[in-house]
Length: 397
Image (tube, rainbow, N blue to C red; front, side):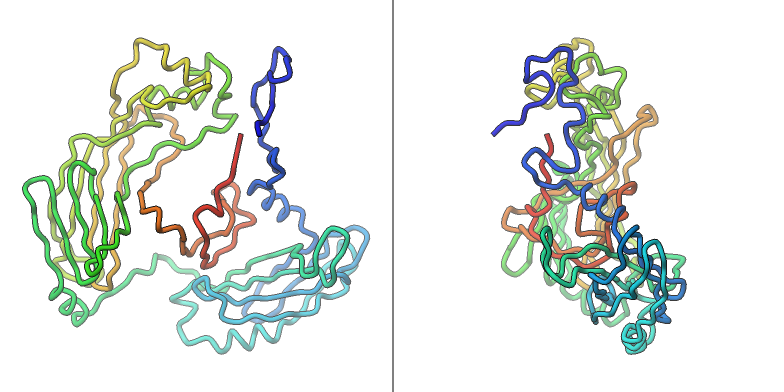
């Protein structure tokens, strides 16, 4: 199977593959933006000025019919996990009108939550409108609208763990660190073994102490690139190296960076109530290599390969990583990227790491479950999610 676009029909001039990725791909698979569109046009809106009271406003966005074909569902979430759920009757609201309803079941469940829940957790109320019966284009229970309302109290700072003296003392009995020459440090706790070296630019491997199972093949490293969109640069056009963002990124070698001059050293710091913790600090230069990667058939990248005046390496920033094992078995990571001031435009500032292929399932608390960004998160809801890594691989031309 192959997908045709501008130029594949003998048409000239053409825009190549420009803007051929819509809300639905040529294989008829919806892209994540389709979920965002569904949210924008949903027929029912839910809102509340005092959600803990159980009073919810229902707005019918339809123009011609009531909500008689729909019923309501609710979920109460603490820390992303559903602790209680139920159903409710939607009011027979006229088109383009609103009505208030009292969800007494929600109020009762909120009252059962332990004292301090709202101060130490993210608490949410999810409200959903679903189809009562099956129809020509939908199954029974098909979701048509969803809203998430936060019940959490506003906090001024991120909640951090605090370790007591007893936990720290017990942990120190199983803790050890050894320095293998100038370039490698190995840290062992009761459950984990972490290896750091200059070749890896920091954390090289993380594995279980008991059975040796590997959790990380390579630790977090800086990532300053992402796949270019058509607005970043049309892949099949030439002459965009100096004028389009994608061309400027390729000229800076942001698509092919590596760390040089790395150093790994042992330090001590007080972390979350645990005194004198071992912290392994790695510093390195982030170097970009223009033309270091091959992109067969991509004209804008081919233009780069033809340049003879490109430097082999460009310093694009500084990398600092601080890693510390903690008494509860977790690991504290702090990654700092200082980007060179000459880079006025960046596709991304982030990190990447490698895990074994056998680790194919992810568990996370975040806005989801669909792919979302700062400017496309209307349809993303806070929750605890579990999914296969391959479930969220979206295909683009």
